[in-house]
Image 1: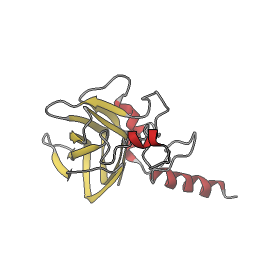
Image 2 (image 1 turned 90 degrees about the horizontal axis):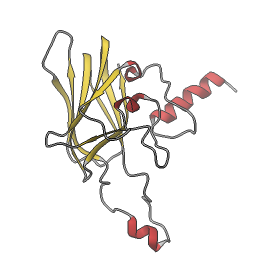
Image 3 (image 1 turned 120 degrees about the vertical axis):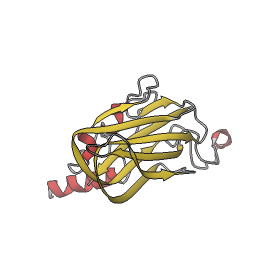
Length: 187
């Protein structure tokens, strides 16, 4: 009956990668929501701003709620920047893990034949996160990950003052595009 507590719980569920139909991330502590988003490239209509639109699933046949970019020899990147530096100590990333396919075993031989029994090709495998501090021109590394296969990754580190953060996608598990549903930043 406590509507504010209910909304707080809904936001916690969204942060933990649960989907609640027609509900968006409105977490006031998420610094990413106020960032300007740019990227190395864009694939079709999967624009970089989608990583902060508050949704972490796509509708069938649409790429409205994720950023996608072609993988070049140098990889791909997406950057969040702010007019005023932000104190950041936690970054959360939601990757694409092939939810458009059946992912669990079923009694249907037809569906079982389509299951990929290894890391999903769409999922970002190798990446690093850098930040640029106020008054600095060189970016410093915060996080480096190799061999990822998970959808939701959370990184906590000693707080930094950042005017921007950049997620560098260096490899996927097989796809020729980098794909990210959501980026969240917390102080």
